[in-house]
Image (cartoon, rainbow, N blue to C red; front, side, top):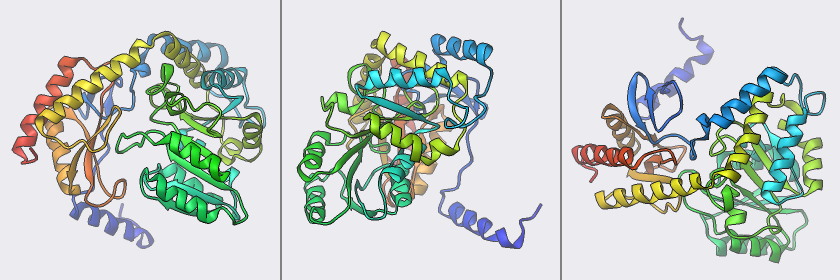
Length: 395
């Protein structure tokens, strides 16, 4: 059926993306999210998953989900503030608070809504947000929703952040200094100790989005605050339950007053149905696995070092990565898309990332190894990268 005239502009926009080589189709996973998976009917080594620790298919998480569904059904039936707060939700939040060494936590439906809902709730029109240039889209959207004045400092440039804070210090209104803990496209770690010192010096609220540090950095995967031993110095910690934890959701950890305020003013919390019992139970089981199986995190880092060393030997540019997120820098968007497609045809799934997700001229493949990859599989991935990279003139 042809598009109505009012929607024809979308076809034109899609044509422009196609002309730039940036139009793509979703790849469909057949079966489980595994280190070697089947996408679009092709068996490939999977370097495109956020399933860092392999918990998506962990037996304890499967059983927790099945048991909760049998006992409690498939849905919660309402938002948390009406009749949708179940005992499992409270158990999960109490467990997360102990895990993060904070007074309390609140679980949101996703990491995106945890960020956007929190920033939008705690800041207002008369306030100021000082944000790293490479912060996640959910932080950017939350800042816009808050209607606060947004000041952006160059990536990880603490001197520039201080200059902004110093300029704003005499002005009325609250100040929020906010950063990713691990940056999702480059895999580098925020200079959190220095940022905390700046927040304290200038009286700003300190907030960190630890989505890609959850389950990866810190003791048993507690995140960047634990990694740098900054407990008590970060006012708002956001984590995810959708990546290393293996399920779905996001959470905010902090003071009891912060969490109660988000109960009353966090719009995604107020207006979205709460997680099904199976999801809450799965997340509880996942936190228990993090405590009981620290060797998974060790395997993740062993695999990360092996793969990074291999990429360096091949001559690839991996940017500033310090974590399992390892970009392979390409530059031009069309070239990155072509590289990704060629790798897929040869048995390796590594997603191309181009503008507007990253700046023009900084397109890359974004790879993530997991704890459940074998070194043989990673060796095969490096062989494919060698062969295809040479064929395309990238190395």
